[in-house]
Length: 126
Image (cartoon, rainbow, N blue to C red; front, side, top):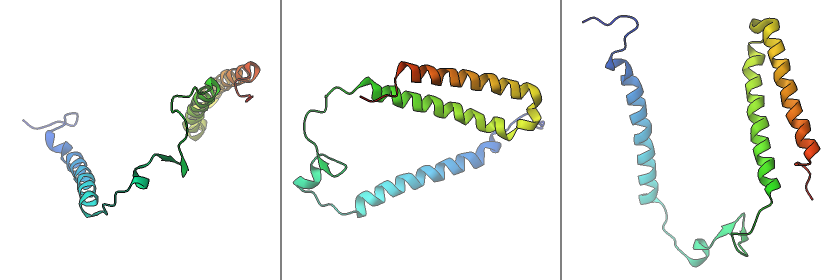
């Protein structure tokens, strides 16, 4: 049976499988080589818990302010929304007036959320 244009045969996926196998093989080789060839110096100082060059002091279970998490979530949220604007800007001319109005509505909603966050004082540190 002769494949048509819309049918895929297993040999079409062979380059992808070869590239995946090569990448996986390189990763495994690199991990094994560094483990076998790397220095093996163990000491009490090297095994100690350090963070940014400062010795850890206190309990790791100290409560963290919710404002830290709110700021992080807001950063991710607004960052993702900005990412949606890039393809729109690239295809701005092809979208025409309809695409422009849709982006205006999107920006109004984005700014409404931003002003709500400012009004609630979530970004203020005390």
